Amino acid sequence: MSELDLRSALRDARRRTLAYVRDLRDEQLHLPLLATVNPMLWELGHVAYFAEFWTLRTLAGAPPMRADADGLYDSARVAHDDRWALPLPDRAGTLAYLAEQLERTIAGIGDDPTAASRYFSRLALHHEDMHGEAILYTRQGLAYAKPPLPPPHAPPRGDRSGEHVAIAAGTYRIGARPTDAFVWDNEKWEHDVHLDAYAIAREPVTNAEFVRFVEAGGYDNADHWSEAGRVWLAEAQPLHPLSWRRGAQGWERRSFDRWIALAPNEPVVGVNAFEAQAYCAFVGKRLPSEAEWEIAATGGTRRTYPWGEDEPTPQHANLDGWYGELTEVGAFPAGMSPFGVRDLLGNVWEWTSTPFGPYPGFAPDPYREYSEPWFGDHVVLRGGAWSTRARMITTRWRNFYRPQRRDILTGFRTCE
Image (cartoon, rainbow, N blue to C red):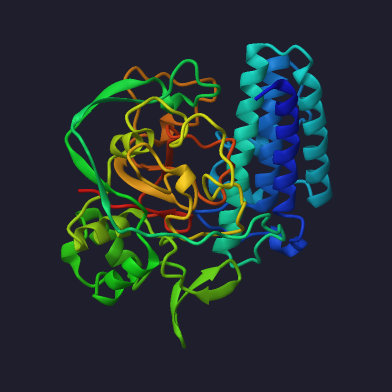
């Protein structure tokens, strides 16, 4: 990404962020206190604060744009539940802060930026990309309307195979390379892993497949569930995935504020790691480890995307809101990996069996709070969703959530 492209990308990220909230009424910005969301005005202000902190204050030594910014928007200092009681600026004040920060950040990039300027600008960019995706999760979770962004492409038809692809035992390399354009600290650095022979599903598990688990009493049979899964099952008492219901004509899924017929060939979405593990046990399979997932995506070669080094397009994957929502599995043959595994990027984030932890020799980057605080009690997800910005996702990108989260765009594939 050139420096001119970087400036454009920062503006694009901000346009997308604002588009996700522009249609919301003021009262919709005032969210209930929930563990899985942030106050909407806080989230927006935090996006500006983070970019200001790293691109202006840390990099350029500029004074704070707001004297109260640290006490309002620093996520490391302000506990989650306390964010609802803060004296936050109103909508107009928050938007003004976002606008001023963006112009100062872009002006600071300059015509001949240093490596540090490029790094911190990319950090701010991808941080905003992630918070934009979180705003979509919030809108979905609260049954708000889908943001009024018309998809630029008609969804393609899929071609589900239901097959598993065999991958030979061997020693492979995973993780980031020093030559990669932008790297998070939890991706550093590439290292060898030995894998026994395994077979991984060519596509993610579909709604039609998961319906069989539900209708066979999968949520009532404790034998399918891990010990931690049984604890969650007893507390949550689910009967089916979070956004499902039985309608007059069969199973339905809630897409933002609308109930739609459950599409059999779309990937199941919104299930947590315990539900994914239970389904795998039901069919005599398991979840892949993150190393198995990454090797399935790269073909054992060092590549940024399953198809090679060309940047993602709508022909490769369902990313960036290109299709507006979920698409059927197996719809992107151009995105296939060298092993013939499909749908590895986009559509739904995929749970793995791997607890989130450091790679060998881990050291935190300047944004110390990004990875290290979450080691141990989170689980790795891979691949991105339809809501993930294409410029951010790669075959090495490690997302992480607590295993009980089911309010996010998560699915999975099986392994044996």
